[in-house]
Image (tube, rainbow, N blue to C red):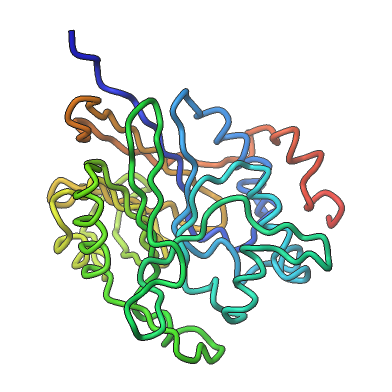
Length: 296
């Protein structure tokens, strides 16, 4: 008898921007975000973020060069991170320090991969990992992460010879490479976005750069988790789920996939944006141990 489909859950938040503390209305904040993540976790769950984890941050993170945010994400259990434009605000060397740490200060850096499939020095070879393949429940899911092509035009510091390749060409290249390895389930962490007129789980007259990008992607792509515009939407375009969860840790996107262990394909998928509201308890370990605690 063939094995049944494997349920895989992906929890995503974008454009966190170092918002470690709750908003004025009590929503958001890393301790409540972590609490909601813990509540929604199932056996096969991965936590991801498509860009702008740091940069343009409140003082509680920015004053300490955004180290508190990286440390908090280590505690939260972030599995995969795709770069956004604001990760480059302080230049490449500082971004590498956040990624790999600084032994002289005791800062360990991130415990999660930084993906930047379209970041290169003119030769097309990415200087960050372009993707990561995660095995969950006996099935494999590929995550390809990239920032918007216009990153260099909107980031303040001189990024020298860094270049940012076209999103569609980049995604297509790695989808086809990974298909050769037998990967059939693809999730894109794309730091580019759009806007729509409805509520957090609507897709009313969606516009913006992300729409054109998604329409040109290979049919093999299953999910695009987006950001950058700080808007919310929950859409399906040409058979691909496309979502965004606002900004500042106020929302969490939950994507549920069912993957055939035989064909390795995604056979069912759904998404929902969930509110990180003030009624959620703080996650105890982060509330107790987070770098935020000593900096309030």
